[in-house]
Image 1 (cartoon, rainbow, N blue to C red):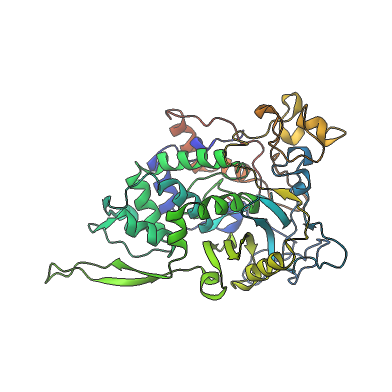
Image 2: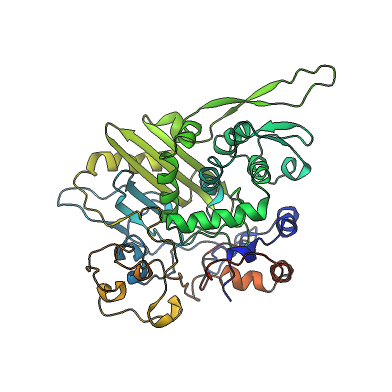
Amino acid sequence: MAPSRALAVTTTALVAVALTAAPVTASALGAPTFGSSSSAGGSASPSPSASPSPSPSPTLPRVTDTLDPALSIGGPRLAQMNSVIVDTPAGVPAPPAVSDVAWVIADADTGEILAAKNPHAHLLPASTLKTLTAIHLLPRIRPTAVLTATRAEADADGTRVGMVAGATYTAQQLFQALVMSSGNDAAYGLAALNGGLPKTVTELGDLADELGAHDTVVVDPSGLDAPGQRSSAYDLALFGRAAISLPAYARLATTKTATFPSVPARTSRARGTFVIGNHNRLLWNYPGTIGVKNGFTKAAHRTFIGAARRGERIYIVTEMYGTGSSWRPAASLLDWAFTHGDVARPVGRLVERGEVPEPPVARDDKPAAEATPEAGPSAARGPGADAATNPGTSPAASAAPGPAALRPSDADVTRSPVALVGSTALLAVALVLAAGARRVSRRRRRALTGRHR
């Protein structure tokens, strides 16, 4: 059964259970297990990547998902896995090898994707998901709105800006903490101002659909690893493009330091402040950086959305499952784009907002993972669609293809998050609570897979 976004977070109680539960291992998340040997600590040892593209790291896992090219949002070439997707004239070097499982380089203005690797692989987004949270809530919450913090925010897991239960904070302060300092407490505070976690998560799922980000399932607005949560390098590029077009987000993402309220002094009504800094290292080190958001968890590894401007050009880079902590891989991809972007032929594109609002449906109403690809890509896209046309451009919106369910190989990857979580008490609670849910997701997520919970 493919659970909907509504099922993932039907009530606040379910989210509270997930947030306060004991730490969950990467294997319980559905993270990939590679190889058969174990380290001294008992964790699985990754096997070397068999990717045909060069890799500076022997520990990058190989993506074993598959995607029907006819159902690949952004273009059929983006369905390719485990190799760099690029089209350049003779004499133009390939993009630099970076220690990321997935990445995308795109022109922010035209939406053209210049190069990519595993763009539609389902991976954990970590705090890059806060980008989606911010671009949704910035237009909806007044900067002057005030929240009185509770223990739910103050005791948030992971990175916190330092909210204190009983203290008050403006929405503007929380947005600064969210984007700059990646505060999970700030994410929950903003969700509270928006009407609660379940409402916010549902709306974030709707926004992902509107953007055409159908690889994304939102469970926790902070981006903390949660059962079923996922995204892709392609979807992160959609988030980044939407973020830099929003002036309020751009201002936050390019602010290096700000002040945040501290605990009120007992002996005085005066309330002090402390300085918070922007966690995006690219902003501090790469001239022209205009955002967007960094992320990290032990299961997701390093994730990143970056954007930079030189002259009239703006390029977006996204990275997922990065094995290092440096800003330099993103900088090297941006350098390549600014040097060779004018001659690199696009291998796909970022769809426009509202262009592909529904997930793909395989022909003959078969589940995407079971559908047999047509002889030619144009046949799957419907009448009026040329073989080179990107998904979402056919005359009928219902004919616009998108990403199929990414199907893992049983030999290389652990079972999908649904299979892992399905036997747990958490999903049992979700199923009971979902029976009374007011809203059911517009569509069912088919054949959830990936390497995370």
